[in-house]
Amino acid sequence: MCAESCPDSSTSTVVCQPTEVDYCSNYTPYDTYEILNYCIPSASALANESYTANGNEFTTSNYYLSMYESRWVFVICIFIALALALVYIKFMDWCAVPVAWGTIVVIEIALCVSGYFSYAYAQNLIAEDGSRNSFTAGALCTASACWIAAGLFYIVMFCNFKSLKISIAIIETAADFFADTKRIVIVPLGYFSLWVLVFVFWIWGLTGVCSITTDGNFYDINAQF
Image 1 (spheres, rainbow, N blue to C red):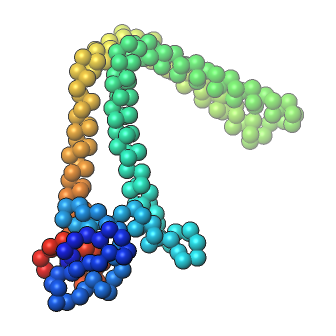
Image 2: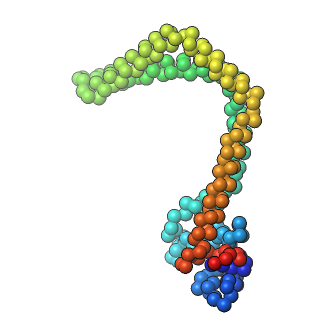
Image 3: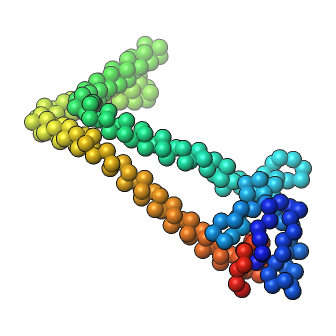
């Protein structure tokens, strides 16, 4: 509805436009904020409309209400993510090479250890039952697959050791580049901010479309019919 001012409570007096037709008397006012020339319901107003008369059980989804109430958490998390990105860049500058070699070693050890535990599990089942079954066969197949994968992984790493060193050197160079170009973390933040503005503008337009319907319950300050 077109109104002269935004209501701030359920007892507010809302003067609608045009004044010769009292549209607003058909609806109960609610607490709102004026945003982009529209009266947007507050979180408390949405909560009051969502609760039933018998208790505190929601009658509609509170997904958007929860997002609105957590808005400051989202804003804080953006800056936390920015700080973590800077820490991560510095960490990669210091530890890129050890992490790369360590990853290779951990993968090889993990495959061997997984095969050993699968084999040990199969032997325990055989010792308990005294015979082989589908569980022991599955455990033995898993052990064989892990050991074969470990062997193939080792052969590939051994045969391509020179290429592996070049790859790790490239990772180290990339880590040095990111450490020397910390402003690169601003790019995703700027991209996110841009699309937040686009989303807000889209919501503004959507609200405008909804406010011109005959059955809408939207307040619009000084809007034209």
